[in-house]
Length: 317
Length: 266
Figure 1: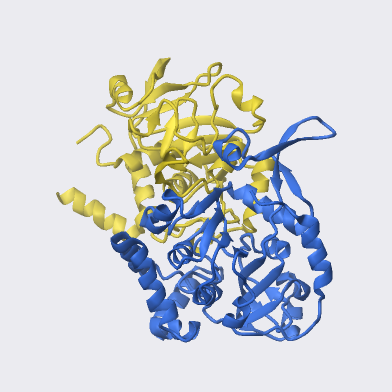
Figure 2 (figure 1 turned 90 degrees about the vertical axis):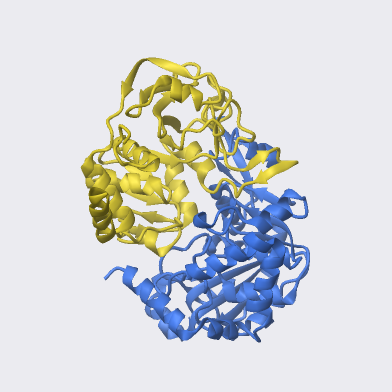
């Protein structure tokens, strides 16, 4: 378990400055802020609102010795592993999705000890981000007690000073960087999402550097027209990236559904060829294109429109 | 044809589980069979059952034939009354709002401990599994947890390789001594039987048999010494109505109707 350094995270936040300036940049420039050895928290969950444009840009940089946290992680983990970027996974579950079986590249790296997997419970990881976001070193909870997960992680307990009850003490997690995909943001970093928020708010507020991609860049007036939809205020955000379809091939609530055929093709590729299959995926879908727009163009406007219709059909009306 | 007609083992389990869900309760379901079992209960005897999913989704309905494959996706939110975040959903569980939780199991032992982390040891895994997800939280925090899984000897083991999700640990009062003061294990539903945990020892105990199944068959598929209740009941096979609702939800009404016609002409 890494050293919890909440006060250090606070000192960095105090010193960082909160200039209200145009924070727009390309995905490549934004992810260049990530250094070898950083802990990167990835927003969304499994294949929902994954910041894929940012993930692809980070893959392109071929960073080394990263740790990645994400509560339910999808095949992006395998892409980081296969390209040699990832040493440690912090998650409650790692897979592709239930229909696609066990993830072979993840299995290979973890079973052979080439990558470490710190397995926390869903709530415990959520509370780790929340403690980080609250600026306190731990949060007490009734989950994870008595399990081998707690033993493996050397999770400590705490005694309530009022009642004497024993609780698990879940340590704060302050990631170096959080990557978040949203529906709308203005150039200053006021961020809005529709639908569920996953663990994005706590993850971002805990992080040292926050990079947000958005389906649309809108005016501050447009943000202010629906202030209750704002999930992060501008002073928590360091970089804003315009990324229409920026979660594709994953879904974005109300905008487009997941491209399950794309997942099928990926799963087949790694089932047959393991790490080589994952590397081939990166070569074809990331390295072969100048940017994420190139990847989207290869998917084709018809495909994206169909996924959009899919999402519209599921929305309340 | 078996005593359960043309119902598959999964359908038998789901329908057995659905009957155990009471009206005016809140169920924390996972995708797949638990979600379908909850939805069947809502269609029949429990119209006020509220279905909650770990993606932060409260009061969802299902669009027949368009079932979610993740608890965090749009199809899981269809018709929902509230959307919140993941941590928040589990805090409702910790507060005691969720009457039922549902869990499957790669391995489950005589005390209801569940392993979904590793086959073999963590240091030298034979298979590293995806991990707990919300299972550890569900078994720690929901008021009553139902385990639903296929009854196979390789699953029902004397001791799990790794306690991902704590049941009654080593039995007796060991669960509460570990600090798990909330939650209890309810029934275990399989394609062969209905089981529970004997109150003092907290060991798994046979309570009911699926139609046409014998105690010997259950023992054969259980890798530990199973307690048997003095009274073992025979469970009703799924009714035609239960099966029709289950299949409509799973496949969409048109597909389910076509399958019924095809089965009838076979």
